[in-house]
Structure formats: C-alpha cells, structure tokens
Image 1 (cartoon, rainbow, N blue to C red):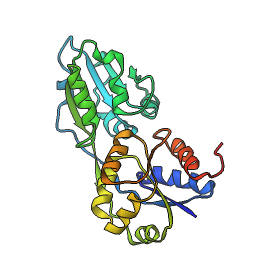
Image 2: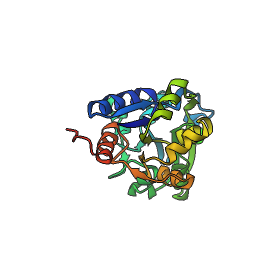
Image 3: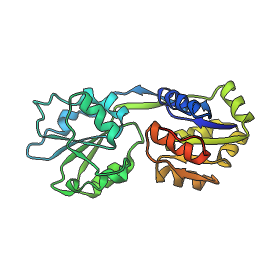
Image 4: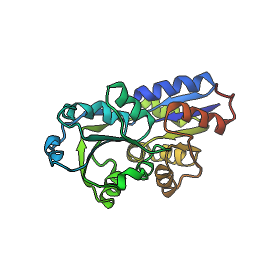
Length: 251
C-alpha cells in the first residue's frame, strides 16, 4: 500500500490527491503553507517611468499573476511594457486575463530556463519581478548580470501551516511512502515543524521534485532517492508517480 505525501497548497493538493486515488494510491494531503496578498513597498509606475528604456514585467507563477496583475498600470499608460513568464501555466493565467505574453522560454519552466531567452540580453532596462518575499533570487541575479535594473514587487506572502495530529498520525503509520515537493520553502517548513523521526522517514523514502534546485537541496539534507518529475503541473506529477510506483498507466 503506497502512500503519497502531497505538500502543495491545498487546492492543488486536493486535485492531485483525487487523481492519485483514481490509480490506486493513497494520498496524504499536508499543505505546509497558504498564501496571503501583500502590498508591494515600491511604486511600480515610478519604476517603469523612464522614457526610452526597455521595461519588463516578470511573472513567476500563476500565483504571482493572481496577486500581482492588479498592480500593473493600465495598458494605455504603458504600451511598451513587455511581459515575461516562467512556464506555460503562468502564460495561460495572463492570457485568460487579457494580457499578452511577449517572452517565454522555448522549453522548461524554471528560473534558469527563463534566463536563457535570447531577447533578454538585448538592450536591458528595468525589470520588475512579481514574487513573494525571499523568492526568485535566481531570476533577479541573472537579470542583473545581463545588465537589467531589477526590482522585486513582493505582492503575496506564504503563511505557514502546522501539520495537524491526523496528518502526523497517518504519516507515522505509513510503511511504503513517497513524498512530493514543489518548493524549497515547503521543505524548510517541514524540516522545522515535523517531528524528527517523521522528517527522517521522509528523507529515507523516495522523493519526487520539480526542479534540480529542489533535488540538490534534498540531496544536501541526506535524502536517499530524489527523482525529477516530468514537469511542475499535477498531470506531470501524476505521470511521474505512476512511473515510480508501477501503477496503471494514466490516459
């Protein structure tokens, strides 16, 4: 009986849990944080005010779109603003809201993939990165190295959630465990808040992650088996778990 610890925010975890149950697996939903809006402590209009300078709005996730889009000035006031995204899900969120996407990596969904976009090296100006506090340092540094003046618009923040007794009890009783991790922030919260024995159990069991950065972080912590998922979305995570467990094929 394989249990799968799902640590994504609740809505995404619930959707993935339903899919895992459909292929005969037993999910344990344990979100380690939720999100809250945050007013950025910068004046975005001022950041983009310099005439004749290339201007970027960098959206790093659908969550950044959700909380950050309202802070963009009306399009008729900034018709030269270029929107840059990490990943197709972020692009879809923007386009659904009626905003065009000007730059996206040809493949991949990580910060490193975004920094490989050829157009970013041309005529650098001002780039505003929509993110949470302490987030997207890789993009900020990478753009700075390319000559951009970078500004982080912190439009949302993570609010930690403590695991409850029911979640801890289920985790303790599992024998065959796989865990899924989609952020380093969740890992740090788990390491801080889980009982030491349960944290050790996670590190000693197979782990699925969505980026080499998370893979490296877990390896440094002593995880014994860390595999990269096919992608960051629930469908790719499901396909990867199916492959790891040998369950039935997902259509």
